[in-house]
Image (cartoon, rainbow, N blue to C red):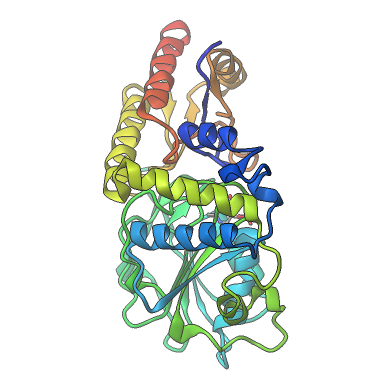
Length: 361
Ligand code: PLP
């Protein structure tokens, strides 16, 4: 069978070794004669999964003790509502850095709860999409927090360097780049991420929240989105997505075995450089993002002759290079190269791209 490499943007990119381990223990977990998804979330066995996974992610991200780690439901979109409802307090506004599709989606949800101060930071740099320098971002004086998205999954735009927001409470949607490299958690008020890219299966959402921000939720906030309620109940206020949680815990252990986030950073940089280098080599392919703002995780590209797209995608599929079709709002192609994608997969893609160009260039 042809080796398959899956370049899907999600849901769920799981390292092959983790899937194999999970397969082995699917029907008989820890000798219990049953699957982990069938045992009680309050059993001592599952509590151990929960505790170990929290410890492992704390180790990986070096999360300070004054932060709670919550394992939630609802995906990142639930957090688009949970963030304002938990953090606005008596303020009427929050700053929203708008750098792409997902940041913009967060604004639209926030508009239900406040009047966001939307700061459009997109610009054109040498004919490509990019991000304005930070000194041109107009933050407001009296906002409850500032929200931004460091990796725009659809646009392929990244704000890698954490901006200096002064003493503002910073909230970040890390859905598509969490665990891809080290970050300084202590500079954030809240970090959230849908699990389904670098963490584990869809259904789980990670929230890391500084303790002093708890207890400010609006009373009408549904309990299931209330960080304080979730923290007080160790993320078990209602039945958690136990299988997704368990598998995410296995991904955390895999990351530690690989050498942690410094090692992921090296690998992700190498993969991105290989792919962008190959796209930039001639004018046959083109990435629409300015060099300084290119994502290491999601790499959109087009061909000069868009009528070749279908042929490219069909032949790539036959060659075992799957899910390269661009997002429906962006078109063209997109290769998502999360932690689970080995460099061999990117090499297979760049070899295929070079061959395709030879035949059709
Ligand atoms: N934010 C980002 C950066 C995303 O990539 C996505 C989904 O891909 C979302 C938010 C929405 O996530 P969810 O589908 O978990 O609500």
